[in-house]
Image 1: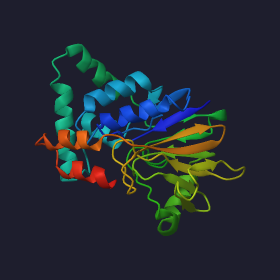
Image 2: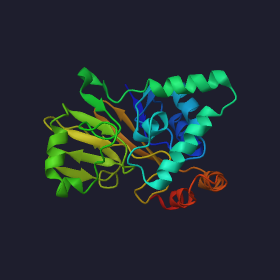
Image 3: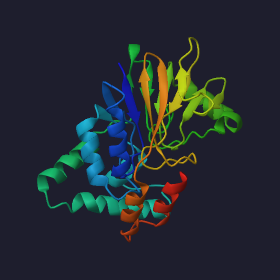
Length: 254
């Protein structure tokens, strides 16, 4: 099956719509989301509605968790954005829509296995700590025990988001950027891998374009899509509870 994997939309509906439009040209059979539909961005309700409509399933990210429950271990800007996002859900005058969105968020899973013989595990953070463990590229060099323990929980392949940095970890251990891979990676027999799909709504690899991947028959293709950053930035800066830096960072992809 040819699937698109998206993650870390963060309330950026312009980026999400651009990715969904791009997917129309990729002939995918389905879309799944690895979490963090909300948080930071100005359009959390629209993003949840689109994910609920267009995705086969979605996972629970740490920002989704923060809106549902409490934003633990968040920096002040992220915490304030989480409380503002929660207020948008609570204050929607459409009672049915409000109930539908809360029900959708509350049923999000933290781990899903899929693919041939369920050999691919999908989580938001890492297979070791599914909601909130960051796995950064330099962990392949400086966190080898961490990477070893994570790969002990992987049968063949894991797909993750959370860091907003796309690329592939192997159990050598090593990390490869999409550029090093020429935007394509193929699973090798006897090798385990962990694929970070990057972020739709807030990339942090110095490339402001929305990031996602398409996976089919053991092959992963990294995709980037331009979207209207100006429109998102204007919305963010019009909302006092959202830090203006959340808009500025979008232009730099950080």
